[in-house]
Length: 279
Image (cartoon, rainbow, N blue to C red; front, side, top):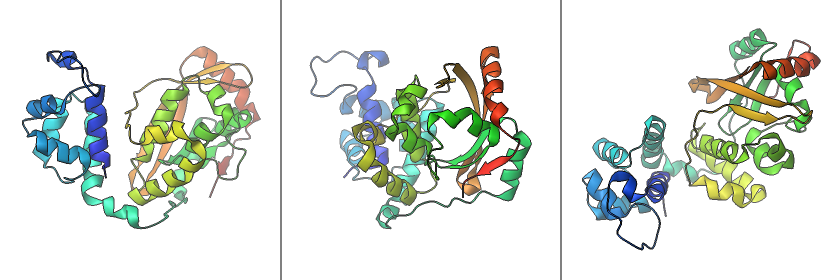
């Protein structure tokens, strides 16, 4: 049985072309990407040890080995952070997967709710890594009202992206958004929450979701593009504040250009200056 750490290392190894690292082309290979023997040599470890890590038979590599693998795979800063996170949950929290269903809490601290009120009429929401929309400004709800996201009592961004056909029309970069939503699942609020949500969503989301779970595609910073149902194209920057003690995030959306600012202003006139919270 594999582990999150092993799956990520194998996925990165498979995505690397040997020539990009100055290695010779060894001809036809049974699988794409970098050979284990080449990665092991670059990291200064044995092929046998690398195999054990990838297959989940070694769950506790040393910090030195983790750093060596990061260097050998030429990981960037975001990928290195993810590698360290996966090392932690693989070595210390895998047992949590056997605890049974564990939905995360949905309470938002009063001070966070007050922060949202102060952000009105901005586009802001509080969410967790599973995608639950726990609270939002009226302006955010007004702008997204026609998209179908708030058609349920407990809106969830990840479920919406994978199960609502309107999401594919809303997000012209749907594949990137789908990768981003799945990547976020690995980072909270806890391993048992991840296991519960993944099992629940996999049954209805299909292969577009399940094939991404172990791919660990680290998202890149990019402008969020929305093809709004009213016909306008929105381009938004996202600023995210991690509420680490709560396992939540405060996300603020800012217009990336004048056209978006004008369109958002028209759409959010439907807001009434209050706060809508889901609990």
